[in-house]
Structure formats: C-alpha cells, structure tokens
Length: 383
Ligand SMILES: Nc1ncnc2c1ncn2[C@@H]1O[C@H](COP(=O)(O)OP(=O)(O)OP(=O)(O)O)[C@@H](O)[C@H]1O
Image 1 (cartoon, helix red, strand yellow):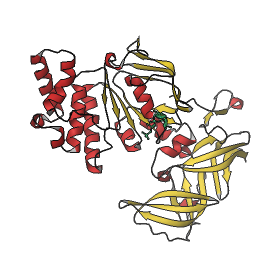
Image 2 (image 1 turned 90 degrees about the vertical axis):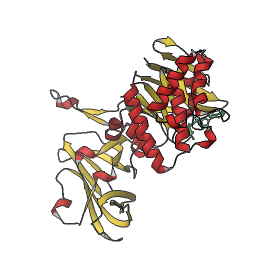
Image 3 (image 1 turned 45 degrees about the vertical axis):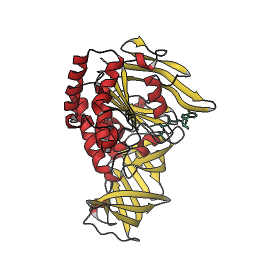
Image 4 (image 1 turned 180 degrees about the vertical axis):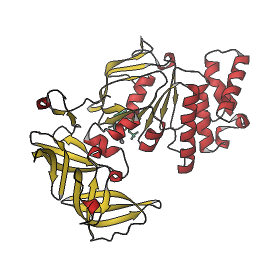
C-alpha cells in the first residue's frame, strides 16, 4: 500500500513562502508528477514528503498514519536523487545491498533481493563495477534499483532524468513508465518537463508560485486547463491567450477581440472580460474568402503571416492578429509567406475561456429545465 494524503502543507524559508497550503491525495499505485516552472516549490514539497524538510504548517498521512513528525528513515519511502547519490567506493552490488544491511536483513535474503532487482532493471552484468565505471544512464538505473530493493510504500524521484542526453531520456522515461506498471507501486516524481509529465503520469499536480494550480490526469490538464497559467504551461508551442470580451449577440454567446470573432452557442450571458485560449494545433489556416475560412460557429481570426518555422514533420506559422501574435501548427506542404493575409479558424469546442481577473477557467453551466439559470462557473484547482 502507498496512499499519501497532504493536508494544507506549507513551508517558508525566512521571508520566502516556497509551498503554500497544498492539499492533495496520492492514491496507491498512482504515478503523481509534481510539475511546474523553476522555483515553484516542487523539490520543497517532495522533501517534506520524504521527511528531509519539516513543514511550517500542515500534515501528512501515509496509509492512514500521521507521519508529519516521523523521521525520514521511519517513513518507508525511497528517494531517488537527481545526483543519484551512489557511494563511489562501493561496487554496484554493495550499493544495492546497503539499505538492506542498514536494516540488518539476512545475508541470503540480501543476495536474493539484489539479484532480483538487478535483473528487473537490467544491470545484472554491472554488479561488480564501481559507479565511476558506469555511464549516466547506468548510474540512474542503479539509483532506481537501490530504491527498489527496499520495497518501500512509495518511490520519490527528483528530476532523475535531467543528467541524461535527449535520446537516453526518452528510453529511460519509457523504462520508468514500464517499471511503474509492472510494480503497481506509488511514484511521486518531480520535473519541469511537460513531456515527461504527460507521458508518465497517471496524475499531474501543477504548481505555480508554491500553490497547487491544478490536479488531474494528463488528459484533464490538456483538455480542460483550470487557469490561464495551466493553459500557457502545457503544450508546445504554448496555448494562444488573447484578451477578449464575452457578450451576447443575435441570440448567441460570442467572444470578440480586435480581428477576432467567435460564436459559441445559442444563449445569453452578461458581458464579461475574459482571456480566450486556443491551442496552436486546434487552429487551421486559410486564404481569406475561401469557404473554409467562414465557419458558422467557432472562432475566426483575421491575421497577417509574420514568420514560419519548419519543425521537420510540420511547421508552426506565427501570425499577427490585432495586437496579438498567434501560433498555428500546420502541415509542411502549405506555403505561406510573411505579409500574406490569412484567416485562422477553430471549432467552438476547442476554445477555452478564463476570467480576466482571477485567471480561472470558466465553464458554461446549463440547467436543461431552467435555461434562465445558465451561468458561468469557475471550477476549483483539484479535479
Ligand atoms: N533552503 C532554502 N533557503 C531559502 N530559500 C529556499 C531554500 N530552498 C528553496 N528555497 C526557495 O523556495 C522556492 C522553491 O524552491 P524549490 O527548490 O522547491 O523549487 P523547484 O520548483 O523545485 O525549482 P527547480 O525546478 O529550479 O528545482 C524558491 O524560491 C527557492 O529559492
């Protein structure tokens, strides 16, 4: 078992508030990724879970037991550090056996567990080597194996792939995801890399300035970003975010901004300042006047091509729309020159609306029986 509950956890360093009132539950078997930009509090949060840092306030529970004051050694959690923290003078086998010797495990049992784990992460042939005789990827595997050998309730990992080159990162990412599936254990994993988060996580906790911005599955974060920050953080290129005004026009709910008009659906709404979010992959690009450029619902943006970037398999075209720069992902074969007038369009269901003041997502709430009670709601951070 490895179910972890964080309750209003906070940590300050003198006048820096690194983690602010974070509450979340990690279910047994979850692969939770703590994601966010540099300095948002990921490592501080992980170190509090590991027992390496005392919370300023709040509490932590592991499988129903309060562990807020428990020392790190007593938590039954295994940490894999970015630096791997292997003992340089010990062989791989002895590095793996070390946590078991500390617990006075029987010699035969140690040998059995070291060999089983070495086989699982495919380092059986490296057992006699010292850490300096290993590649970065091999060291990373030894660090994971040393955590595995303890059979902890949960694995804690702080950017364990950041020292690897791009190719090895991809391979090791897939290995870790496979290992998680095979073990069915709880993983808590810190990264600022959204690709790692999207590909490995069963749940992502997105942090911003020490606060939990959104908690949900990778799909939920991508499909329904809870805030302007979440929309801007996940996705590459980033979601286009445009200041706009929400209002009613000819019986339809519409969004207007310079050179942009979006018709959402039939209904009425009070006027409101919003931020409109559209992912570059949800926009298509057309010549003005073409039939595809005039959708009856959804967004139409009139722009001028600024620049296009060739990504090999596709291109990203940047356009000026009103005072905004808007990115569009497009197939390689299309040729648009800087200065060309274009129309960009997007389906209404791919438009995201956020309140301009709070930055939180707006969800249209409609009670089928009482159409007059239709209104906008701002969902909370956790899904
Ligand atoms: N020991 C410390 N003393 C003072 N301030 C600290 C200490 N540790 C962290 N901080 C501050 O707390 C904030 C959060 O830091 P933390 O290392 O948790 O962020 P992070 O999201 O893990 O960043 P990165 O991705 O760069 O590792 C930062 O402003 C950092 O400067």
